[in-house]
Length: 268
Image 1: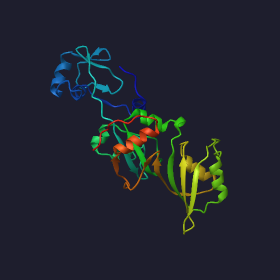
Image 2: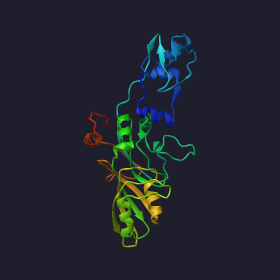
Image 3: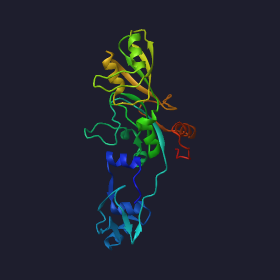
Image 4: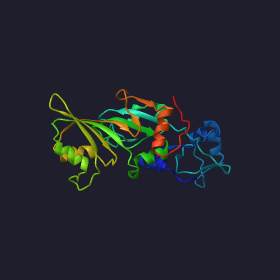
């Protein structure tokens, strides 16, 4: 079996998928479900070197090797897919949640969930905005690995007026209470008529809950946090809780920003 890609490692770590052996054989196009049962009962099918005679045996996708009469049986590759989703608050950016909270997968139709698109990075439970999902492992890796420092832009509404001193600290780089040293953040303040302030912030570091921890240490109370851009991809007017495919131009821009060549992608 070929080595696992970054995306496969990530997906399997999140939630390894198991399907019935007869379903696996049928999905691979080898035969019908009933024909798969017959092959298994007759001892033609091996999983990880062992003869399996139970059609209901569970095969772990991406880990188990399936052979029929000595020939490897593999599932067809899914076309690469890139979508953007406008995540609401109270949604978890994981494939499955042990606490049974609603996840981004619940916002997708069944055909997209079946493609096992992985959220690229995270938006915390109380944050909303742009979230990219894809089954392209190279794009996922380059967007999430710290060394690429891909810019992400946020709108952050805080309750208080923001002093120039606080802006200067963020722009120069600051040390969080927990000890982490942050890189400088691009930030602009737009005072609101009601005394609140809208901050527009561009981060390249992507530390866990970075904006919330920065504001906490500067005595600022976040009322709303929304991500509006990831690299060259902007949220635009996409409605809250909805999704769409990236168009070919957006995919090309995204890949170019990551140093990758573009290719034709599936678009609904």
